[in-house]
Length: 112
Image (cartoon, rainbow, N blue to C red):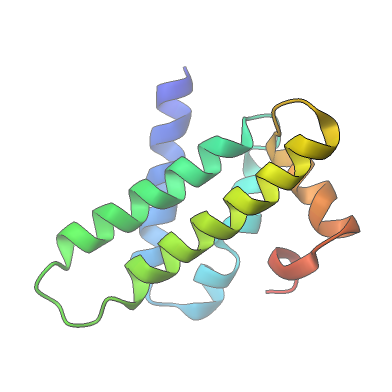
């Protein structure tokens, strides 16, 4: 079951990153957290990193590396938030924890 959810997350993230639509890309992380609130937050990071790598592979010869770079950046930012949450709560973070953290501490992903 986890693999199927992860595949869905990756597929969604690839579609958003490859769209080139800045509004869709801007909502990508928040959308993942909202759609998968009960899943481990690190799954979001993995999905973002995997999606960035997939987009990078598809557009390997394209000089525009913006979409993969954004995907990697988003993944790194989410990883930092996850570490902060896990240090505060002393347990693995879930998607809902990210949403709560963003409302209370760092609204970056809620503003886009």
